[in-house]
Length: 533
Image 1 (cartoon, rainbow, N blue to C red):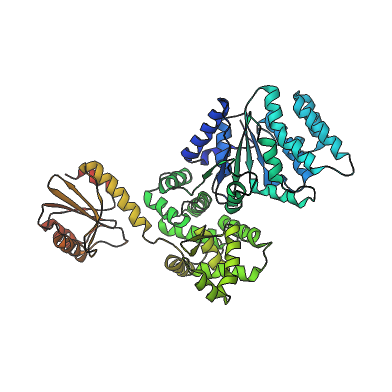
Image 2 (cartoon, rainbow, N blue to C red; image 1 turned 90 degrees about the vertical axis):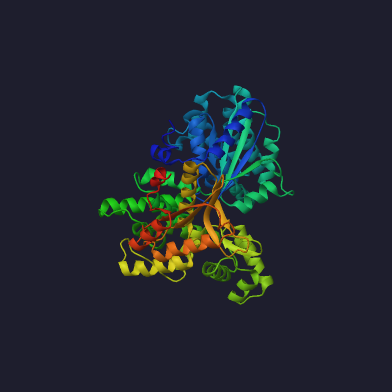
């Protein structure tokens, strides 16, 4: 089912999105009960909006999908393809190529065979209008927009219509006859009862303007839901589908580089899989780093191709191309920068700089947070930083070059160098809480001078946990410093249970000191927590 629209390999890659699927299910249930509910999804490009739609349509056949960006070149082309896709979904449900529905004569033949009067009437009127020397563009758009509801009423059925990249409807404004295609769309759908609309868009700022600006015709007509990058847990699940059997450390390393973006995650995983199978390499954190750099900096890398595409389509129509590039370069070197700092970097006034920043916000390359600016996609930031310097890698770069690039990457372009430590801290917290039957939280003493990774209390006993997630063994000094910290706390005279967890184990002197001071030590094998008493 839906083999053309949603092939098997994509079905296997679908991960979680339970919240969004539940919202779509609620919309479908509301429609079936006679309560119309229209919704819209916003999210960065390749974040998984289309895959979410495909998964829902696979689970709930009988609905319609149209990518507006692919058909919105002119009112004539749009109306033909819009009506063609409606017929295609009603007749084929995504199981075959839609070619026979995209040309007027073939479409007329298909619609005649389908025996749906509303559809036959629409293509007949469409063909008649096409025969005229001067075509009525508003009539053609109205014909397309009103068709789904007419079919629902004729066949006494309910349909969800998914319109992907909906912001592209604005292209139809190029026609002198079409003043506002969104107003035509609103006029057509406002009295519908059998059709529910689900809009999706990658240009978040434009979509927000279309749906949330009180001056726009679609203001307050749609419930809005943001599609976010994956959580750490969802990223691990996606990674496990491509790299089964790997340790959490490997998946965490991928998450550190991809920031949970499904496309970046998949690209790195597939590159790692290729290296591992083609060159018989062990999958290590070092290999993950190499795969990420190759994906970002090689012409063959999918992330590189995606970032270059995003860069080109975002700036292709911009005025002041050179200044925009300069701003992006300044932000690539240092995020969280104010207008004044950026203006100084590009040698422009803050007033002039503000206009360019607003434009970059409109195309969703950057975002403003508390008067400072950041990239929306941190991986794109990394790509641009190296792209502007002309740095490029082959598929199998030299080890020394990789080492230098990785050092630079860790120092300048990764937002959170301690993500892995925090991930293990959380994992440890969950396991210890379950084992000890208490709640553990990060603890800071009243004067702010001493911090304990995890602390908790059960009856009169205080539990204190230190976590070191680094690539060398914890030594005598590490244990000694932990003991000194516990002695300076305000509850130093209370009975305590001490734990020290180290990714890379302990030196013999550290183990001896820990034992003499009743410190329970654990290494990266957190399953050993089960033996704690």
